[in-house]
Length: 334
Ligand code: HEC
Ligand code: HEC
Image (cartoon, rainbow, N blue to C red; front, side, top):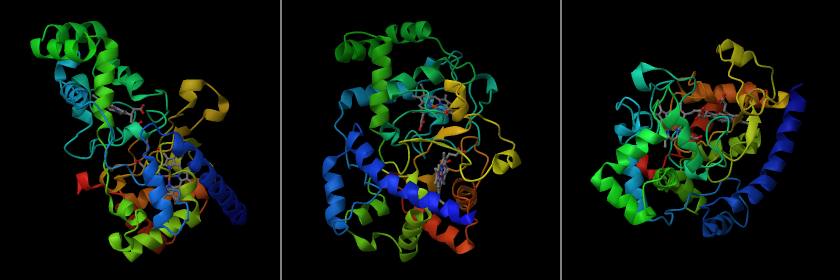
């Protein structure tokens, strides 16, 4: 059994390199020069993880407007919740509770992912039901358990506010749903976390990360983690089943029966399929997994070894991989 898991891992890694080359090239804000820098820095070898661009070209006025909207509780039905209530931008872009609390104390089903670097994900939400950040906005805004708002009310509020209506008039020719979605998405795209020690390492500074983190990166590749967690966001560019290598004992143990992408497509093969989360800043985004059921990073890594690779990782292996994951924390969060 063990052998076949390992072979599956190797096949996956092979695919990953191909996938990565193809997928990363299509990222909307991928900086092509960074991919080249990697090849040069790492001895002509194409690495499966790509450093984040140091900046993205965006209309700063739209970013500023989006930031206002993101933090504005008046967008919610009862005027108490904003996007920033659950996605704390001065901290990790998420929260630190397993499930987040929306209007009137209602608790949702899933853990809030960080909005940092979300512009690099190929889809939004754990089940990928939104194709873009623009499309994503309606989800929380209208969800009775999150902001419990309505477009009519939002447009009325913004239209009745002198500062907002002037800004929208100026940038979009008026207050519309599309304009609100665009401004919020533009702000989110500005939330990047470049210059993690690991990115400096990829760009050629061998000493930017500790020897333990380097061993961890090698393990991350050798074990096959990289087959799913790769590219600019070290994830965020494919769907995968949770528990591919082993049956769902872990999920059952954790009492979690979220069917993931199946709830979007209704297809049998999509049961327990989730978007592979990006692992940038993962040392700062506990608790883990779609249900926020795991409190610590070593435990999340151990579970991944079992559920995705069919391997009981040694304590030392977990430590090395965690050291590598810690090197993915961008400067913004240090
Ligand atoms: C009550 C808490 C709450 C509020 C308020 C909230 N979110 Fe979220 N956010 C979540 C949760 C939980 C998820 C994951 C839901 C899922 O995957 O089904 C999520 C997912 C996301 C994602 C997807 C990230 C990814 O990697 O897939 C983005 C982007 C996002 N929210 C932005 C926003 C914006 C913009 C607003 C305001 C319009 C907002 N959120 C309001 C809790 C919240
Ligand atoms: C076959 C694909 C696949 C492989 C291989 C894989 N992962 Fe994952 N990883 C996922 C998916 C899917 C999730 C989301 C699981 C969930 O929410 O239940 C995830 C979640 C995670 C998380 C939690 C992230 C968060 O924000 O909650 C960490 C940490 C992680 N993986 C690390 C690893 C490590 C380390 C390895 C190698 C030992 C690995 N993964 C191998 C697909 C994979």
